[in-house]
Length: 320
Image (cartoon, rainbow, N blue to C red; front, side, top):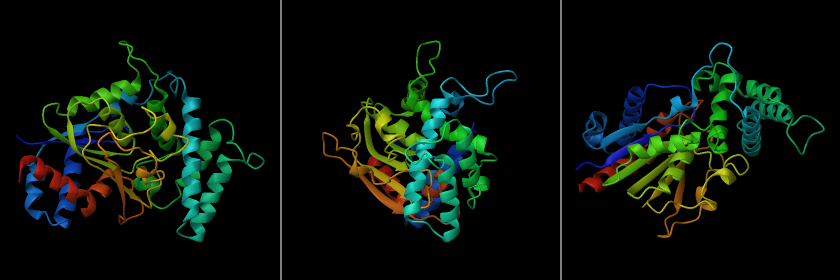
């Protein structure tokens, strides 16, 4: 029986789940080849190595609002404030190790837009200051084009998805909150009777960790990519359960971050995530991708340091 491999995506607009699955598999195969597993590339791409699934929940955030409908859901002001807190923390961290004087000037300008003069201890009011700061960040090389964000409004809307998930609101007709519906989508793709290797990205790392706390099956390997869990104000304290702990179902947790990934927070999860009852801790490692925009999942999956352990976990789960 083949092990299951489940991919969990992050923020962004509606997507074609089948096309995304193919793209993630091909990126993983590229990384596997670089890691010395060329013999497993065809098995990965064709789905012979594992029962591969793509846990898709992007449609639950809704598409563009209908004509005459409110542009933003209830609670959007609160969500935008959380985005501002996230951006402020990310800016401060990036300013500790900037790439160039030009980047310093740009990042400082964006920070000043988030925290106007005279408000050094607090964020500016309303959402316009967030849009202004994001417009500035969109001038960073590659963010607008490779990030898929044509406007500040679109980028803020995608970042707001993290806040909407963590707000635990937006009940459906069954009374389920948005975050519960998203976790249900992920759990439906896990194998309760056999091993499941979970590879998750961005917001998907938050969703996956919370989902696995109530999952009774076996997770030989959890891989988190570009995770925002290290955001000490915007994300970390809002996750459940608290204090943050490795889910008991997880045998091994590898966390990967890229220094140039502006979306990811403080990356060394083992510094604040408690070990499981079986003493499992996250192990964080830095990767360095080529290009000017490194947050996409495919950038991470093509790294041999990421793909190698995934392939090895699949082989171990199949007994060879």
